[in-house]
Length: 416
Image (tube, rainbow, N blue to C red; front, top):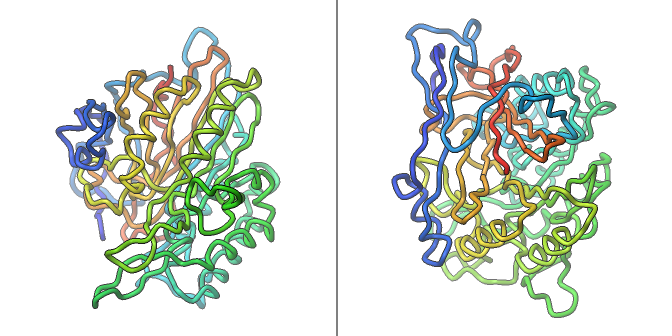
């Protein structure tokens, strides 16, 4: 998909009910699907003739509905307690990848600029989560995936920003790391790729990305989550500075068959493990906030409605209910769709789902204000949690050098 870029003259954050957008059909028929959800989707007005080399990523004005805008803090001296940044989806499209010159398959212009921008933030974040689709993958030949991941790790270690010494990166798996494209009845589809789990955990260990991994679910005992292998280093959690971070593999290798493909079901999550983990964090006096991260969204962003864009619909209602009833949960942070989108999930608390799949992969044609960048999540001393998306223009072609520095949008308070 190719999306051309025009100079942005203003930013508007538009609000609508989920029932009015394409995501309504993905919420299932249970209690979660029947409730209204608020969506915050980036849109823009533009002036003709702008170029990627001169355009500004943020306009003169910004407004929000369903989230409070502010500046660098919430006002009144509300100090920052801790923060993290995240983004997903930086890999190139297959036709744009040259293994000889770019073995990582990353959009190098955007990746190196993001590393530089993150290290240049006034408040250096405690963590940088890369929410899947670091690399092109999707190849049944696992040596291809392994080579791409190894090259990506080397890029991080050697980046001239010095990010490896300043901000620890924790990668999450995406479908491009976990699945493979193969033909079923003459059509190429994504299928489970069993050996990919071992390639991924080897990548984490080999590049120092797995320091927090290890407490996740396994198939031992009753295997309530129907796991096909040990997922303890792909789905897991850890605590830091009063925040409980949960990282989900949203394409967990399961034993549950898929009759349509003859493989196993996709979009699987370890729901039983997650429920127990969140309950323990909710009860802990050491935890003030809970953050859940995964690659695939729970509900589709505006304009995208097919089921492969989200987690397995079997889990949609239950996961929405779980996040809503767990009072310390501050949001679900994901990627997969190549755009930026914020919406309230169904439920009484209105937990936000933030999609930041704008890391450098070719943007969705439905992305009405296309920008690359990353998202900063800020925890204030007052207990408020804010989100800032840092935006830079999408050049033509999308992997063109140089990438411009990102500009911060106003902070949106998403919790409480």
